[in-house]
Image 1 (cartoon, one colour):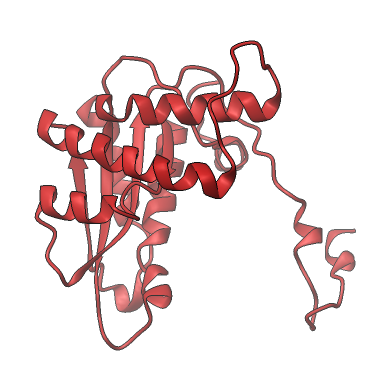
Image 2 (image 1 turned 90 degrees about the vertical axis):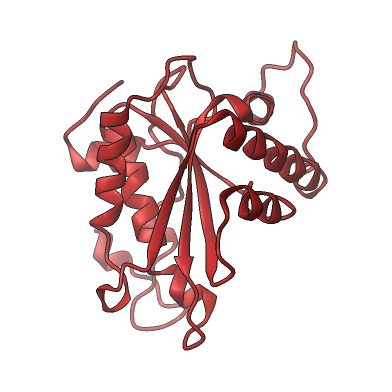
Length: 213
C-alpha cells in the first residue's frame, strides 16, 4: 500500500513506521510534508514554530547520540529487551523494529519541531499550537507513501544534545522529533480502541452509544 489521496484511508492506515529502506527522501516529497505542517492551526495564528531538517552527517551523528540516550531510558520503563531471533510474537516483532530504528538512527533524515515559549500559557496549552503541525506532517508523509515515526529522542538527555547541535535558542521548546524514510513493509490499518469506548455524552461517565448506533 503506497500513495493515497483518500483522507480517511490515510488517517486509518498511518501506522508508525520504524523500518526503512536505504533510499533517501527526495527534497520535493519532504517539502510537501513541511508545507502541510504549515497549514495547521495555531493559537492566534501566530505560527511561532520552526522546523529544522536534520540530514547532514554532523546532525545525524547528534541524532544517533540522542537516540542511544533515549533507548537507555525507555528500556527499563517499558521492560524492553532485544528479542531472540526465533521469537516471532507481536511484541518481539515490535521490539525488533524499535531496536532497528535506534541502531540505524544516524542513517536517516529527521525533522526537529520547535515552538517559541511564552510565559502567558502552560507548555501543554502551547503544544496545541505545534502538535497539529506535526500531525499534518505525518499525514502528508503517509499520503505520499513515506514512512514516519515520532520519537522521544529530543527528550531526556537528547534534548541538550540536539539543542547544542542545532543551536536552538533558550526561548524555544523542543516539541518533538520525527524520522522519515521510505518504508520497508506495508502501512496500516492502525490498531486503536473504538471511539465509543472513549466517548461520553453530557457527563463524565455517561455512555455515548446513541452517537454510534
